[in-house]
Each structure stands twice: as C-alpha cells, then as structure tokens.
Length: 509
Image (tube, rainbow, N blue to C red; front, top):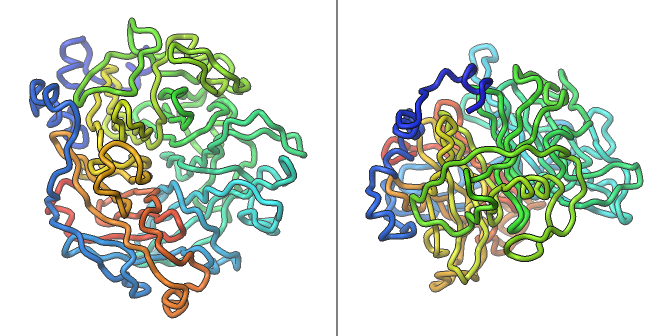
C-alpha cells in the first residue's frame, strides 16, 4: 500500500493484522464467510456448486407494466418493466436496443419524493445509417464521433432513466457516437463512465480513435456530457469500471481473451467531480507478487495470491500481437506494457464492483478443457490479497458471469452471459439466470429469463417495437440495487429494463 493509500484510508497496518482483516466489514462479510468455510473443504471441492435458493424456487411472474411473464422469480417478488427497445422517450427519441451496463448515479429529494437517476449503456457498434446513432439529430445529445470507420458510423451510447417513489417516470438520450459501450461504472459525484469494448487501431473519417472511457452526467440539461475520452484510463476492450470511494482510485476490467488483467487508475485529481478524470492519472496492471505473468485462469475455490501493481507508461499505445508464455495473443497497448512488467493473465475479465475496500470482478471465459465456466475474484485492497470466491466448472453452476453487483446487505449477485456449449452442458441450458454467490462459494438461482413472445403478444401489450421470439438465452446485464436495497434494477439485453422488489431479507441479497 503506497503512502497516498495509507493517508486516505487509515486502515489497519501490519502484515498479519491486514490479512486477518482482509475481508472485514458488512459487505466484505461474504468473503470472510467463504474463508471460514474451511481450507480443506475448498481444496477438496476445487470448485463451486449449485445450491438451493434461500428465497425458494422460481416460477413465471407477470410484469406489473405489461402483464407479460418476462422473467421467473421466487414467491413474493414482483417487478415493473420500462425503457423497452422501440419505446418513445421523454425527448421524443426512440429507445435503442442492446441494453447492457447500468448504474445508479444519483439519489435525491424532489419535493417530498425520492428520485433515482440511472444511466444505461446501449452496446451497439456500427451502422451505415447515421440515423441509428443514439441521440442522432439532437444538438442536446453529446456525440463523440460523427464520422465513419470502414463506411459505418459508431452508434452506441447512453440513455438516462428516472425512478421516483416506486415508479418509472421518464427516460432520455444522454450520449452517443461511441462503439459498443458494454459495461461501465458510477462515480461518487453523479455521473457514469461509459466504456467502449474494442481493441482496434483504426481511425475514423474524423480522425478519432476508439476503445476509450467517457463520462456521462446524470442530468444532461444542467451538465452537458464531455465529448472527449478519458485517454489516461487506457485504450482497450473496456468492460467495467468501479471506484473505491475511500481513495478515489478506479478499478477496470478488459474483455480481451487471455490477454488482460485487472487495472487500477490513480487520478491526478483524486478529489473527484465532473470532468476531474480528464486531468489524467496513472494506469496500472495487477501483478502477483514474485510470480511474473501468473496464469490465474484456472484457480481452485478459495485459492489466494498476494499482489501488487505495475505501471502502464502509455495508456494510448496501439494494440499488437503479444508473444506470451501461452503463445501469441492479440493484446491491447496497455496490456502489452503491463505484461512486460509481469502482470497476471486472466481469461476475460468483465464485471467489477468495489465494496468496503474489496474489489470484486468476474472472469467469464468458458473452455471445455480445462473445465471453465466462470470465476469471481475478490481483491482486498489493504492487504492486496486476491481470493477466488467463486469457481464455476459447469454451465449449471454459473454460465459465464458478466456484470455483477454487491447489495447494500452484502450479497454478491451476477448476470449470466453464456451459451449452450462448455463444461457441464448436459442438461443443455435453456435460459440465462441471475445468480447469487453463497457464503461457502456456491451459487443459487435468483431469477430466470422467461422472455418468449410472439409479435402479436407484444403488440397487444403495447410493445410493437420489441424483439419477438425466444429470447430466454439472452444475457442479463446492468444489475444494481437502489441505495436502500429495496429495488434491484437490471436489464434483459435484448431490450427492456426491470425494477424488482420483494422480501430481500429472506436471503443473502
């Protein structure tokens, strides 16, 4: 831990004390209970198991908005849908599709009401039609790139949603002209980082590069989004970003197969505030201490490593083929430099969340040999101890964990984004799930995608622009709880946002 960390945190010092306290705190209690499950048990089991849910079995539940049974939930839970693909928003624009990462960026009082503003990513890539860009034709919607790459426009972007006193109120376009904003992360000052998932060295017709992080404010009528990328956070196939409120440091993941690590960004202006990240900072990659380029793609449940950081000198460096201990891989510029400094190797890091000084992040890469269907890691920042708290070697235990979040009560929830091939593929998966991680490192199903409707059914429900057919294997995305833990906001990627409520205290969420 460097001097700046020490001064800002004021956490426990001393090797033994730091390790003993590595998973302390109300949210970190889950990781503590994982460790307390017993080292012998963890080594013998090797991997996680699928367990019964404390909330009970799921069954189809009708949406309170449309009446359609979009998902399955345990008894006692209900939900309201909003922001469907094709819906007209408050600004008159049509809601885009590809609903991905999402976060709560503001909770505030409006008169006697409590209002929450969320920012949602739309992971769209390119189109030959400029009218398909998020916010196209509206001067009020900030656009990064209005040019073309290989004849196509970048059409990804963001929409903001308003939830007030238990109901959806409105939505509006907030940013556009970017490529595949997959995940991201909420700041502590009322904004969202929209992250492009592309490791391309190409330049568009306007001379702009892609693979960056952008900041989107909660209220664009008051604070127009800065159209400039935060270059110091790196040019890569970005996934999630998560801030540690104790230091102002950000933690980032990269979805670049077998050529990625966990990154840390130390802002030059760590006090924060809108546009503060544009002041630059230092990007670093995670390294296992005394083990150069440690291969962490296939850990055992509860396996631990002591880590440190290696600097990335040029976060804007081009990607290239990288010769590694496992052969040649396609790597981003930041990872090329991190690897040269000894950074660790993961399969494909995705979701990321910081809670009580612990960074939780997922590795969703699936392979049959060795059997891998996803991992979740917990990095305790004071001791720099990295622990594998969830290890799925079967699609029935966890099918490619992608976005994840930690509830205010300390439960870890992840979104599945997998397919039907991989280890443990019998019985063949027929739907994607929201799963929670148990104290012993297992998982249970909290919700199941049940979206399978005809065009006539959707039209009768007032959603003629929504995708029809069997979408049950479409991923969940963007899970995030309201600050009081009463509402779980989450996306079905094909194009709808849900607000789920119910008896959370019956289980770990």
